[in-house]
Image (cartoon, rainbow, N blue to C red; front, side):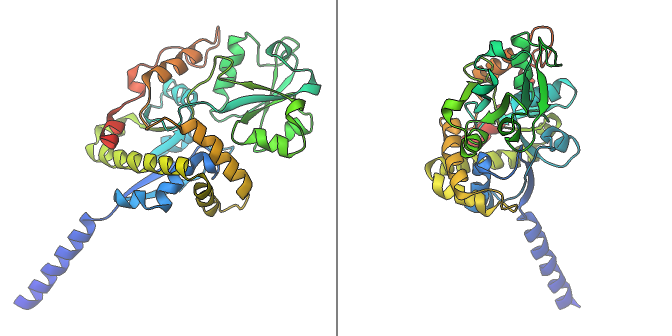
Length: 330
């Protein structure tokens, strides 16, 4: 009996030890499909950076009909990748998203127009159809149009907004004079389809004074009251930023890691390699900590929408925190 009791006790001790060492689960919801835009996270997983932080990370791809804010609101993720305009708009509507890290330092968003549509300057927009991404991606566009005082409900003095899907067909098929593109993705799809740079006029949002922060990490505010959550998310950010810096320094290998994680088979090596090189230009110089000046610039842009701004009041400092990056980087 005594020997059996000791055996049971040892087994229980081993079980508890195993439980104590179990990795912490983290679910990450991406803003878009698996591609080099999210290379840092796939690299962190592939290279064991998450394992080193005792994390078991599930990366959930996004898509044209997936809104990260809706996913985290429904309990489907611990952390989401989202653009700040979308996150701040969600916060003003009652979903308390908080920016905990900002890997992307610069904006890659553009509006790409066919010259044969007659659109070569913003003054040519009225009366035209423009392709716009939705599910949170529309806010920089709406802010820009509001700044220009151009209605988005059609008519000769306004623009007709075409809900743009996961392709550049509206521009190629002349369904829209302009479409939304990113410097690292859709713009090159347009060129690969046969149009040349001379056929196009490109408006970079940064050049129009409406550039806003993209691809930040967001969590729900209430979770930051939990020390255990803060600890594991700090480890997640540390490992993720390690992945991002590795991807910047090794773009070819990072692109291949992304391809290995693309279950759809939709991506090509050439496109992902090009994308990774362009993405590195947007993450360069960022250690993950949000620059308050970049936050204020984004807020100012969203508030400057005339009679129909994206957000109606300054969200305050509660919309972002350095608590996580301070723990992760120090």
